[in-house]
Image: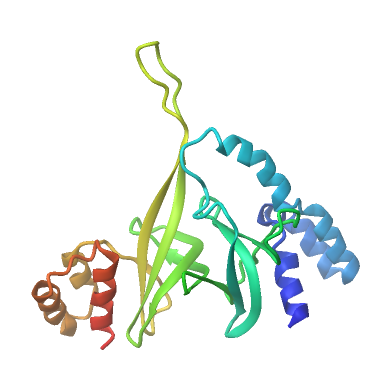
Length: 246
């Protein structure tokens, strides 16, 4: 288990470093470099703390934050169903990156959690893991989704992500400058049993009814109406999927 934890932390040291040096790292490993090659890969990866030390000074000038929480929170990490123990994390929803530490010490260097889809952590008691999904604009993306429900007919996921909008200087003394800002957004995705695809849910009752099998359409429509549910509300969306999983 210790070896597995080391590998997860080690190879996730910096995703930008992996992207930049992927070709070199692959050739080193394929040459049978063993520990030496691993050391070379590590040298190519800048610690997250160094990158963020520069960025956080800039973030102070912006509205909002790229992080869901600016502080590191305790969580449990899993590989598949195997409990790997407690770590501390914060989620950079702008970069789709989970930064982790073994302790909550400010002196400890943060690393990036591996984007292996078998790796997950708990966020508010729900599993957060790296997935591939399709947006309402039919774009296939990779990012972190929280599993809200793992039902027999449908799975329900939540995505919290951040967008950056660059500010605008004041055109004249009568107009205020618009500061750069980070804006947080929430999306929901579903996966039908037996279908290897996760699609975004349009948060309208009528749109949800169209997504389900014909045999369930009338039942779901009646259930939403009788219980006065509006799936724009997360609690109502969960109730609708609980009904579909009966």
